[in-house]
Image (tube, rainbow, N blue to C red):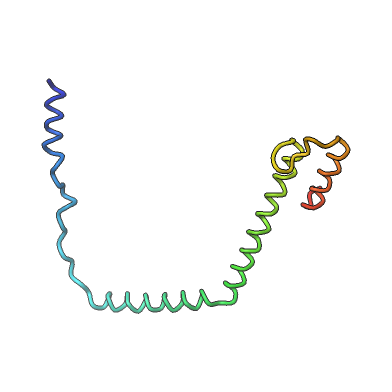
Length: 115
């Protein structure tokens, strides 16, 4: 009986919009602050545009792109070596003789620059 009453009260109040749906009062606008804000926004936009066109940023973005490609290849090489050692994956040396397997793994490590 008690659960039924709680449920009916929740159902009755669940459609109530709440205080957050009531708009707040309109605040006065201060012209000086509006002008100051607009000037700052223009300065920031100009500085952003200059920064995006700067040679330093272009150089750093290119370096980042090259590093991403290099790091990706290093990761692939690392997993290939691990797969060869464990005998799983695309670089598996499972069907090779022990001597060929060691040569293959050494070749992978040399190619990857791993000691």
